[in-house]
Image 1 (cartoon, rainbow, N blue to C red):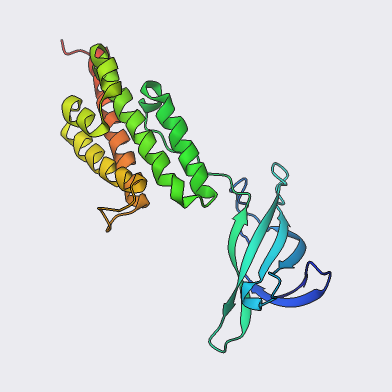
Image 2 (tube, rainbow, N blue to C red; image 1 turned 180 degrees about the horizontal axis):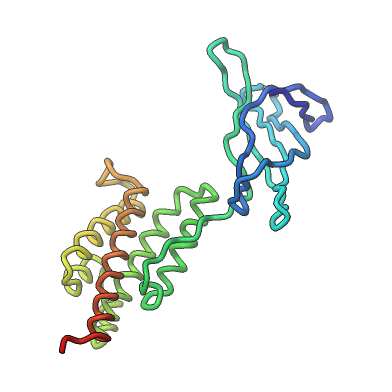
Length: 230
């Protein structure tokens, strides 16, 4: 597709581009975005490889109607012709974290930090997402252990995460997942990585597994207490 885009100097350029948003990044619903205005930005040298095409869109849904920007960057095809491809859209609403049943009741701060970490990820703040996930994990584990051992609450809060997992978690599944999540979380906060074959996606999976196993235990205890064997 071709489009007329205005430069900061007020000059119109016809630009070939591809990629029309098929969902609103704010409300997350599928839609046929309404195109409003276009612009091209470029550094002083004006090299087209450094150009950015920006298109202003509106979500057509009455319950949303928000404006958002699609950002396009230049690409060369096999004939070395340049066209612009959709690369990102903003503002973007972060997906709400999935919190396993019963977990938020014992660790509301875990849920809050996890949601903030996902919000950072939605804004491409990739260098701080892992640190946020590591902090969320520590609150989850320590709140869970303090819930299990309220008499040791003060001691649990002062311990390192690794020692807390070793000393106070007896469920093998929770311990296995929490340990590995800790290893990857530490990689996100240190200069050098140890687990180079794993990344932040693995960390998110391990945190999800950890809270799911915790949820299973909490629910099992709940129904065992409510429905004792006669």
